[in-house]
Length: 391
Image 1 (cartoon, rainbow, N blue to C red):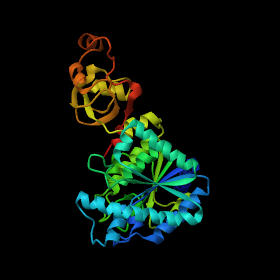
Image 2 (image 1 turned 180 degrees about the horizontal axis):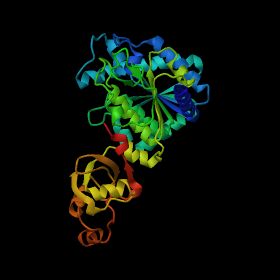
Image 3 (image 1 turned 180 degrees about the vertical axis):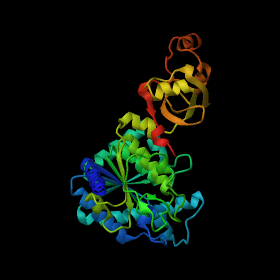
Image 4 (image 1 turned 60 degrees about the vertical axis):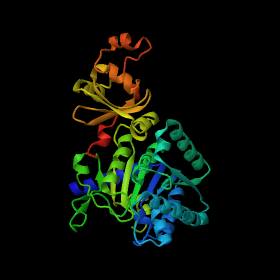
């Protein structure tokens, strides 16, 4: 009886997530789209497109975050392995990206669906103005009944402006669109409770909260064509669920995988959204913008920010790290090095160092009357501890 009750509850959870999913972001990994030799698997692309079209027929909006450009380029160039240096990776992406988009376009065309290519670097989402421009472009494409196909701009990305992998990019796009559901299609069935190579290991059907016990289940293996892994997917799931959306991870090679998800079948792993979400400004501060520095604070300041919802005052700052300007996003961490929040600094790094540890009433005498009482106002603070725990 208890087992039946648990199954019934999970069915209801899956249905509730799908009912709320007016917009769906689908991330497709390299290994889902390519053969073991690195060639683009056109039959897999065609099957995926047909399922996306069926999701569209339900009235939902769909954005695809698609890997595969480098893998497709490897196949087109006849390479026997993935390049390891940046110039060759970027060249492979340049060759493969047009081939990948042509494949999507030819498969969507018979269904009357138009496609649009969007190539992003991390700096596009780091800037608040460009972040909003990307959002407006995507919303306009939805208005025009187009399928946005999004990828990292691998041909120009460098270490400083890379997202790291398309799992992270998909999480940011999901938050950007306030999409209630991110579907991660990968080359494993889901998150296993144990070693995936063990035949007795079971897939966890529903994860209600991503904590240390969950992140410890992630392995370290990577495929020869992809760049991610289970740790990458859990980090993406943490970003999305902490903002108030759900994530569904499933095997992209499974026949009719998207159809089965749409039917709320018990496949893969569903990560439930946290109860408290983030608004658009908080999403950018806490999840998208690149921090320019760090403020190390004492225990009292952490409690005031994290537990009492207060602003960060100079008296609680014990160290200023980095070289940032007024208005930049900075990380707040405790003296043990644990990040717990991010926010917009009212002071440059130089001024923050001058006033650290000072009482608010003494700052005016040092910097003059046109100063802020808070180093970071609570309206510009976002708690991140839950989103980054275990990463």
